[in-house]
Length: 196
Picture (cartoon, rainbow, N blue to C red):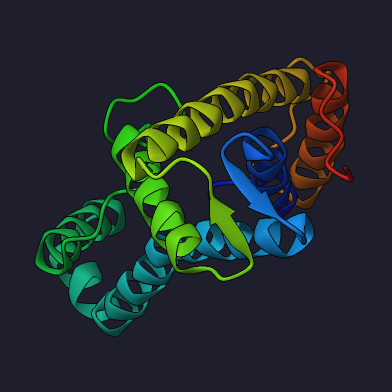
């Protein structure tokens, strides 16, 4: 998943915190935050499932690709792009579409639509503002701010790893451990505690 599960949960909690009591009223903010986190997680998982499907397809044709000298990365990209256009999936990765953030602007906008749909149908809360587009735009603004902060944190954590005296290969177990540790440290510097 493009975002850490902890950050998805944090984003959901922040959305509820910033939207209550002015925009939404609820007696159970934790339940609403969990529902928002479910929407975000499901939307982020769509592309992960698509990537898995492409990998499975490429495994079936690995002998052919080896014989013909076809690049795995090139075939992966082609098949994924074909499936994305056929299924009308909104590409999640912002860096693939030229956006500065991890998530594409289109994906964040799509997720804001899904969140507002879920909020409108949820019986655990009441939207104080009947203009759902205004609420959706506020959700979009809050999410964008949080994602921009997360992107800075991610870049800073990766830079810390790259600045080590010895080279640590990206994707290795050591890289992943250091990334998680530095990521949490950088978030705390910004006053973001994933536990809250």
